[in-house]
Image (spheres, rainbow, N blue to C red):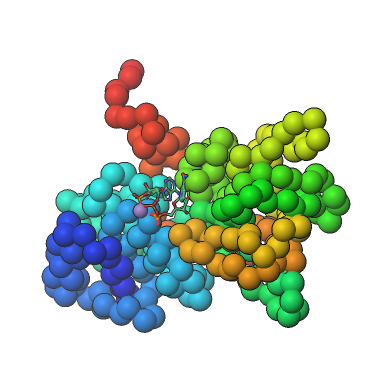
Length: 268
Ligand code: NAP
Ligand code: MN
């Protein structure tokens, strides 16, 4: 089995990576950063996001494993002191995996009939840093509302604990194939009105955003800024592609949520 190690630049992560290389060299596992079967990330959720975008063209072949060198993450199951146990699981691997939905983002540009298709693991946002963003919102091709405010955040279930949570979205168990649309500082008064609540769309529905302001709207995709070119419209839907993780043990989703946001307190 071919293994890639994708680490952030922190001291703790470098140490863990060095230990991983040492241990892997004592097994039949092979280090291969170009065509890996398994990508081990060392760092935090942000490191996993970077690794996802680095290997985005090989998602079908790859299973990810996340080691966290800081706090417990949503994509990182393993602690830095568990590397031996992890290598042992890799040596005895029989293809165990769990997969999660991804977000398809299609941007159509105004001037040149060009478009971009991007995948997001956490979310995509469209926002206007200055002035208000004005956009018409369509769901499954039907006009839904006209939006005024800072912007919108469209997230996956695993991304629901990230930006989405900060803007008042619900936490969605990633067993659901769904995308969530949350508003970022919408304007609501006697003249302008938006729905105000987060929306959760099933897999056969899609969202289209047609900005009226166009040229100053910024589109982000996870930690990346995609475009500041004038946009005609953006469509969001659940992707046909998914991200897979090697699942050698199971952390219950809600336990992960309480562990990350509430704390470790024990109750009977
Ligand atoms: P970052 O600024 O380090 O990320 C912000 C925080 O989000 C970090 O603590 C990160 O964890 C955490 N995070 C990332 N994905 C998560 C998830 N699925 N569930 C719960 N927490 C998560 O930047 P980054 O590490 O490159 O991550 C980019 C992400 O930051 C974006 O996708 C977006 O979700 C989030 N973000 C949030 C806000 C906000 O809440 N206002 C604003 C911008 C971006 P680690 O420390 O483990 O990396
Ligand atoms: Mn980070």
